[in-house]
Image: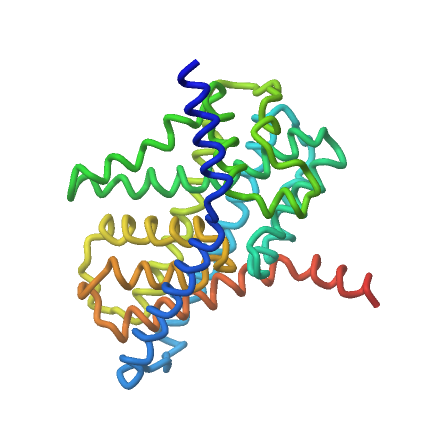
Length: 318
């Protein structure tokens, strides 16, 4: 009984607390930090590049960004399958890839809205809601698992594997309930009631642990990192940094960009966190140019794959 009272009290507090304002403040501070850092070092920055010598690195970075999007799409397919809805064809993957560009629209929820509506048309609203809402938690779990490799530097990093504890058939509803309290705007847009009872309905989850989906999300973040690593080596020829150290910093920075939906596609937050965490280990001018080039490359990858979706939407409005 005491546990139920505590749970209800925690739910009321989380509903009253304005997480949206907090995330917006963090986004503004991160973007400001990056801008100040950029303009302070602007006299040392050069965007000139020898394409004959280094163009292959940028091309490989682009390819790995493309590959990461497909890994993420297949991960979502297996998340939906874990909740009991199996798509025989790859139309779910195609839809995910096509609508991925919507994450850059201010608000950071419109790609989720499109995916929810797509699943809802062929399944029940509960599966659509659960699979859409939980996807970022899978990405975060995969990213944190990679960041936990920092345990070779400090045992504190090992705490990052904790999200995996809740990634099972028994505890996943607790995660959904917490996410529901944080993403109130999503419920408004979907025209769904946002209450703790929204997640009381259990559905037939097909296995205890979603192994395939998690492995694909790990591959997604790892592929993103490889793309960044190629981009960094384009400008940092004498790179002698420990690759595990860079992977840990990249995974943590990317996770912060994911957690703050006010940042479209993590813009500003990822870059600011990476700058802060890498410290003086990489020269300022090199890391700034690398981050900017990587942001442009990853956005172009999203844009290229989403082009058919954008063209169809444009012509439908004409």
